[in-house]
Length: 251
Image (tube, rainbow, N blue to C red; front, side, top):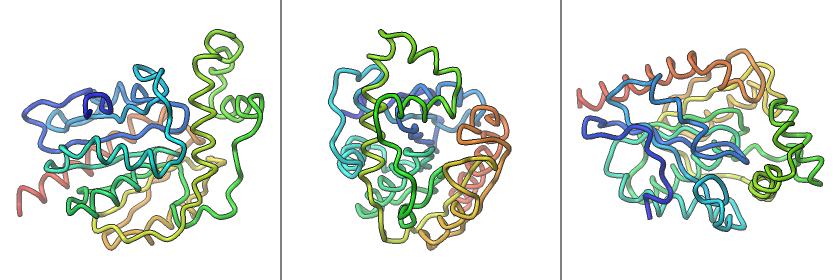
């Protein structure tokens, strides 16, 4: 089951720390296909393969985000014996947090949680709802990435791509969040300074969801800052991963 749920961009015997990446709504594991080149060679780079897209395009998407998080935590169960760092962007940040909580409940908290471009789970009240008509959903996506306009203008591509986007947007809107147990691991936040979906002040509230340390790195850009600032983001993640590795070795 793990092979269905995980795309391994690098994961050999020398990878004692594994970075598990969670894509935003409508996207898939290939979002992180270039990341192994920008991260230390001793770090495994894995991405969660959501159902309903890419190599799993024919599979149904669970009806609720909590169910998807359950499925992911179950599928990744054999990895919890390793040193894991979870990274998620937008919807992926919420999923990464939910999966981190499930790992912790089972006695194996991650070494760190990295969240990007998303309000924390306990502070979702009042957020704008994003699910709507197909045209409204497309307009919302294109507002972040104008290059996708061509995809949705092609009837064949639109038919392939839109169902997963529509289902993910419904998952995000239906997820009410609320109080959660505190994590025992540090949390690292990342955001763009022009993101219309979350402010740096809202990102800082992730600090309220951990007993560990919290830090926030704000970079130039909007909701998809991690494309234009990939080099900077991966350099910072490299430092985070190196620190985690050195602490583990010292202990």
